Length: 131
Image 1 (spheres, rainbow, N blue to C red):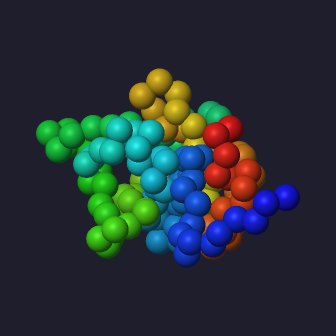
Image 2: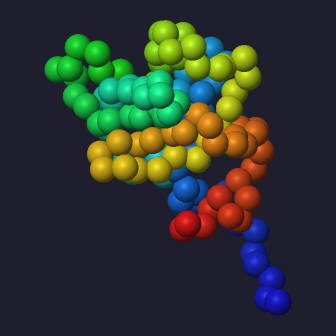
């Protein structure tokens, strides 16, 4: 097996992940942000029957659109202030939960029934694959 050179950089995640943080902030990794087309605004949607959250690219002219913010320069995470959304739909947020997301048409969908991963954990090689 050949050795790999460590370059002090994390592997780029190709799997979209969305984290619902304790205070209701919704964070997107680079893959999720780019899957949505690198939006400045999104709409938040919820299907209560099957407990799916979805994000859809939007623009500032939509009254209920949420701004997507980059917290720092040269970042790898984008934030959405979703506390009112999380509270309204009684989405569990007593701890931060990171889940895989998938595109379905123009929606980035997160299944709240899916197992989550610890948001503090390093991505595994499976997370970084093209699956």
